[in-house]
Length: 344
Image (cartoon, rainbow, N blue to C red):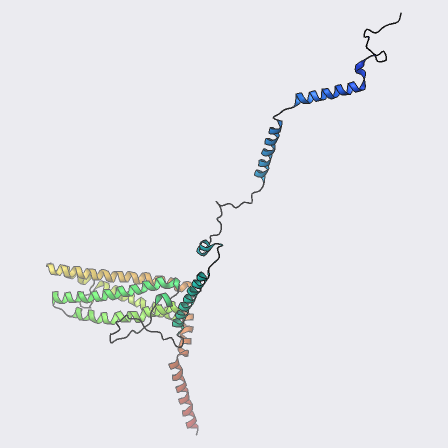
């Protein structure tokens, strides 16, 4: 008996309708799409973007920095002119003002150079001692520490000048002390000697040790340094001797001050106190002398100067002196004339 299919609509040539390749391919594609839909993550793109950003930041952090470190090194400072004008164009008035300022500075430098070198047509006027214009005496020297002395030595030269001024003040106070002794003891020797020492030592100290050290720092002269050391050393000894104050020698020092205070009366004590103040002034002068001669000697030794250099400088200056050359030529001509006359 023939076998009939249970499905009347089934094609007898086809046993399984799902065995068709077209249907199987469509089924496979639908399964693939279904799996893709089930595995789809809508937040996956945001995670990828965040991960990419983090990787970029890490790579930038690991890269060697070439930026400018403002904490360890500051940029080169700009001048006031650069800060003021910057990149803005400079006007014609500003250029003209700068040019006038430069011309004025150049004229001032030229004037100073002419004063230092004594060029023709520029007469150097003496300004020391500073006397009134109507005085019968005229200044004898030209002195300007700011112009003639190098900047690194101006301070020590000023201290030497102030030390000389203080010593002159002490000598003037010594005259007052001698006058008080004249009123107290009726002795005139101290008063007269104090006047004599004031008019002798005050200008002599200026001429014999301040002017040499001034010229030494001005022209780096070893010979003037030697003159200063020699005279200033004896100046220090004399100042110490004046501080002691031996009676009847014209110096109002400690011994004479204590003698006046031991008399017992009020006027004697007053005179003793004044003399004690004068002795303290001489003590300050002695201390200043020791400090300054030590300072100048240190500067002198650091400059490489020596006694041989001073001797060579003295020889050159002595032989280049116009009066010495005239005297030598006169002596030579006289000797030649006498020898020529004796021969004939």
